[in-house]
Length: 174
Image (cartoon, rainbow, N blue to C red):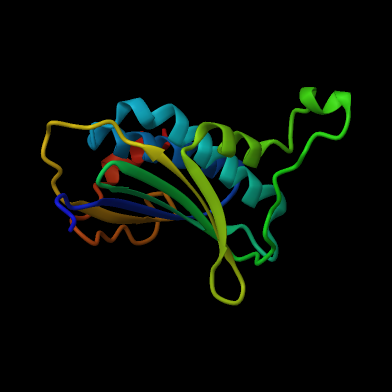
């Protein structure tokens, strides 16, 4: 039995460097609103690593969806893309590997999360996800959901719950 409703946010985007920063700010704003400030650093680091992987490796395009969900005491962050190839956690194979400046995304996810994984999504895609333990909160959780398409003010800003205020998106994108 679920005693508390979940909180959910989704952002569809092209995983381009300029968009990654916007999504970090959107995720951080939602976590602050949900009173999960303690998870902001890990969640934004994780989403940055996953979006960077989409930007560098995904084929045939860079279209992806970021989902953030709080259910009871667990925050799940996932990125779905259109590339069916399942990534590996790279193992260092020489002494210079510890000083590498790239290729450590999933290793970072593994180290900082409670759990993580990859699953196929349909015939032509995958979802990479990680979870973080949420601190207990004495404040009652109220349901709140919405969707932001493209993480900009152009295009539909349609909410599943209430509409996203364009001023909020502008302030996060700035």
